[in-house]
Each structure stands twice: as C-alpha cells, then as structure tokens.
Amino acid sequence: MEWKDKAIDFVMNNGPKVLGAVVIVAAGWIVASWVSRFVERALEKKQLEPPVRMLIGRVMHLLVFALSLVIALDTVGFKMTTVIAAISVAGVGVGLAMQSVLGNLVAGLTIIFTKPFRVGEYIDLLGEEGVVDRVELFTTTLLHADRSHVVIPNRKIVGEVLHNYGTIRQLNLTVGVAYDSNLAEALSAVREVLNRNARVLKDPAPVVGVTMLADSSINVAVKPWVAVGDFGPAQAEIYQGIVEQFRSSKVEIPFPQREVRMLDAKTG
Image 1: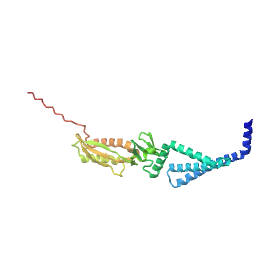
Image 2: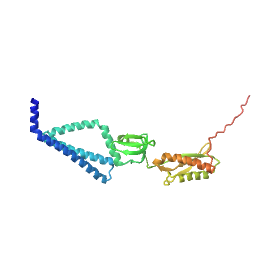
Image 3: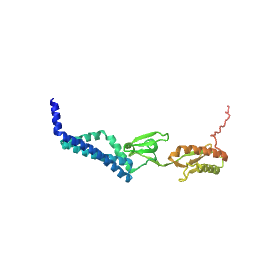
Image 4: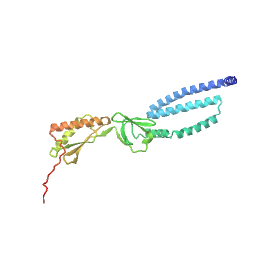
C-alpha cells in the first residue's frame, strides 16, 4: 500500500495548491470567454468584417486562458522556464505541421483587409466562377448558378488573376435578321423588348447594334445589363420576347442558306 500512502501524502501536502490551480483554470476560462465576447461586440461597432472579429476574439480568449494556465501551473509548483521551453518547442513543431493552414489564414486576412471582392459579387478565378457566398479565414465559398458550392482555399486566391464582375453582368446575345428586312425596324423591336423586360437595367444602357454581316443574315448584338441573379432567366426571356416581337413586326429571322450550282461536265 506504499503508493496509497504516497497519494495521501501528496493530497495532504499539495491538495490546496491543486484545488487552487483548478479554480484558477476555471476562472480563467470564464474570464477568457467574457473578454472574447466583449472584444467581438466592441469590434462589431467598428464595422470590421465578421471573420476578423472572430479571429481577434478567439486570440484574446486563447491569450487570457493561456495566462490563467501559466498561473495555475506556477501555483502547483512547476518550473515555468521548463514549461515555456516545452511550449516553444511544441509551437515550432505545430507551425511546421500547419504551414498550409497558416498560409490560408494569412491569405484570408489579406483578402478581408484588401477586399478584392465582397460577398454577393460575381467573380471568375482559377477556372471557377460564381457569386461570392462566404469569405472566411481559411476558405472562400462561391455559389454556382446551379446552386452548388465551390470551396477554394484562400492561399490559392491571393496572387492569382481575378475577374470581378461586381453585382451586375452583361448578357452577350445575338439574333439574325434577313438582308431584305427593315433594319431600323428590327433594331427598334429589340430595344422595345429590352425596355419591357423588368430584369434589364436602365443604367448602364443596353447595347444594341449590328455586329456581323454573315452569309445568310445580318447579326444584331443584344447586350443588356442585368443583376447577377437575373443572368440566366433574363437571357431566356429576352430571346423569347425578340422572337415574338419579330413575328408581330414581320421581321424575318432567316434560315442558313447555301446556293449550289451544278455544272455539266464537258466530254472530249
């Protein structure tokens, strides 16, 4: 029963210290949580980005709790120089193991502070495109038109070429009219369709004009601006509206045509 005697002696000699250390750790956790919430509320009034507020709050929580843990260990009787040295060595190892994670964190902070794009804007990068749904400390999430999500590590974004469309996009539509059609009437019909469509923005003004003299038709470019969310529906509505308007205005949309001539082969 020697180990029991040693355990009893340890409790009798160090029990108050251990109890005090437990109380210090528990109090440190409570104070750290309070400080974290207080800091996040204060930063919210400064209108900082949510990920930045969350990061600073968590860092403050970690620092306060780490301080209480150091005090608790000192109360029990640990040599703090040894503890600090062990923490330093562990920190180096963790840093090497988490290089990619830390890279994403630094890149996330870079994105948050430099603001190359914001939530709700349409961007194109790394072969992916979509509406920015979330910008977090480690990843950025894009929302596709088919409602699927693409999660991109932030370190893949910083330093890459990025195309930011903002909150509006320009449709690039084309419609052909016959060469013998009244071109002014055809252009007027297209503009009328655009004016009636509620999704088409008035500012910037839509671009309508002849873009090509093709083999069988005069091609008219139709380039209205719409909100990002209206990009898909507006295209279908405008094409349908143009077809119906052309039919009522007697503007012909020609079929592709080829003229083939047959020559008699000469015999010797």
